[in-house]
Image (tube, rainbow, N blue to C red; front, side):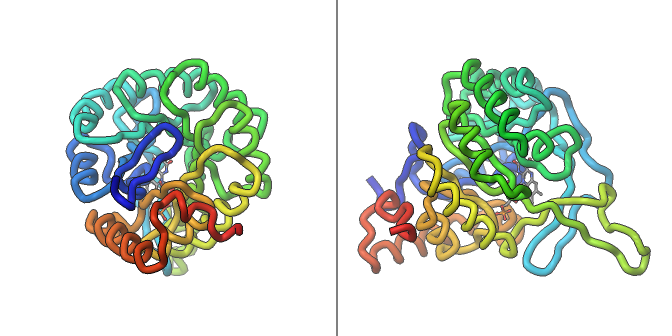
Length: 301
Ligand SMILES: Cc1cc2nc3c(=O)[nH]c(=O)nc-3n(C[C@H](O)[C@H](O)[C@H](O)COP(=O)(O)O)c2cc1C
């Protein structure tokens, strides 16, 4: 077994870095490309019940230290996504991310992802810019618990719950997800953000608000994982601003069993996985860590 192998509960990973939802994961071909680049798994784009166009342009812009996007969860809808899953699943672990508006819809979408042979389903309870979805339902602990419980009773594959940092009750929300039966918690999604064009005297994005990702959010994500590790017992997956092995090591030492990379795949290319894996392996050998698991939560001791 390689020094870099890890597991998120029952999901074994050859390498600890996964592709975060929404980046190079809308087609079977792009998901296969990410697996070949060294990702231990790919989390699909969040898929809803029906085809969705997403928000009008501009829906994406670079800022200092990151990106602000308001894609609005565009996608082909769950029925058509079957084809993409069929192409990708034979090549490795695909986590099916789903975005519903209520518990029944989440349960239906998760059931489809199980039919499509996803190794786990990730519930997007955290998108900051899709009305009626994501963060709007993921900041109410009672609702989070009921959605997770409904999905758990509908599927046998592990259920991961992706949380938003746009709340002051992150720990309560995570405990609610755990009470509902979550098998793992993923944090963080993007931070609600805005960019204004001084020339036009109005918000730059068509949706006005978007989500900040990239290096600027990393300390927020690391803090979130550290806080979560202190209260929940389910495995954690860290995401937000990872571009190199140091960032990944921070998340692992805060308490994550594995991590995801999003924006850096866009800015640095799929090669980012090989770069992070190589750096992490060298660090672990230099500092005497025999496995990823032996590093998990090290910063708490
Ligand atoms: C262009 C773009 C699209 C995204 N789409 C999704 C999505 O469909 N579902 C989701 O849960 N998160 C989505 N995210 C959030 C990422 O999965 C990730 O949580 C966030 O960007 C922080 O990680 P990063 O700094 O490595 O990008 C998206 C992010 C970006 C930049």
